[in-house]
Amino acid sequence: MKRLIKNNVHWLGKIDWELRKFHGEEYSTHSGSSYNSYLIQEEKTVLIDTVWRPFADEFVANLESEIDLESIDYIIINHGENDHSGALSKLMEKIPNTPIYCTKNAVGSLMGQYHKSWNFNVVKTGDTLDIGNGKSLVFVEMRMLHWPDSMATYLTEDNILFSNDAFGQHYACEHLFNDLADQCKLSEEAMKYYANILNPFNKILKKKLEDILSLNLTIDIIATSHGVIWRENPIQIVEKYQAWCNDYQENQITVIYDTMWNGTKQVAEKIVEGIQLEDSDVTVKLFNISKSDDNDLATEVFKSKAIAVGSPTVSNSVLRSLVGFLHYMKELKFKNKKATAFGCYGWSGESPQVLMTMLEEAGFELVGDSFKVNWNMTKNVELEAIEFGKSFVKEL
Ligand code: FEO
Image 1: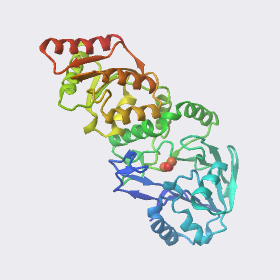
Image 2: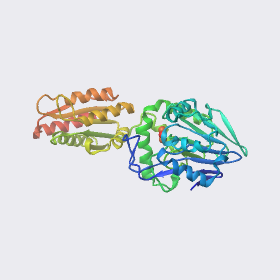
Image 3: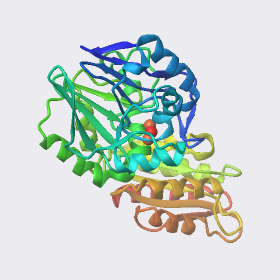
Image 4: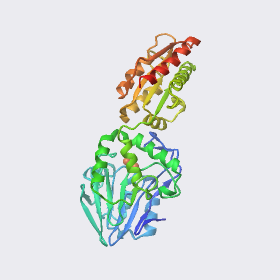
């Protein structure tokens, strides 16, 4: 069923309530997601993006129940990733000659995935497409936001920016619009999406936001490809992105550990105690990494000004949960964040130094020395752990 966005623009996507993992197993989607496709019916009929491949049959059937597929004049593919182009093959079986407008990189992506030489029309930033009734589409390349092929499409007169992945959220919502959504969940999911998907491209995003704003486009609606559509004060999410792409941090310290026999856990708790004693204003959060979701944890790191990471020493190294997570931190390219490390050991005691090296490689600025505890803490060593937490805060 198509749902009205504005005038002759309708949503015709799929809300995926059951989705719990996205990008394979890489991204947790506790709130599901949606794949937003849009239909514009002016003198020309335009389809913007499709849906993920498992929903291809359903999507094409829905589209067919709304319009004669032969009436589609143009297909716009803002981004070739399968969650948006997954129904294209099924659709093109029925209308094989319909022109597809996309970036040059998207042609490579679509041909690489589907091995078809469809009627591609390459567009660049500033190119326009007249769709009649005094309206046109303006294309804006969004290279590396988040793929080399990404672009956005702006509909004049209706002032709708079809932003594809940018400004999206993995959030299945019965309401299509931001003003009707659960504001807390929307805010959390938008930030999680940014931290886990867009943060590596901060510099590019900063420049692109400046470019978009310098175009002085009136933007009444930002129609994303995932989650809810921003129609009430749509610039609020642009302003959030402007803050987030500037090496964002809040007054938060996150302590992350893994543990075998709870020794490192107890050290972590004492470090938290020290942080709280030294600074009663700072938000301190403590996570056992093996009982936490990596993407949620990455979002906590995104919000933090500093992190402390702990592991016991195992085979002269650290528990593998930390290795995977710190590799992920390196991928996300967080900047302007400080860090330290700690851990228990029985014999050789390398884990804090191994963690310090990994933290530095992941782009964190190391603060002071790491802290290690032989076997379990005595009362005196507990006081040392509290002092370590205090001195960490003082040095930030
Ligand atoms: Fe939502 Fe990059 O695909």
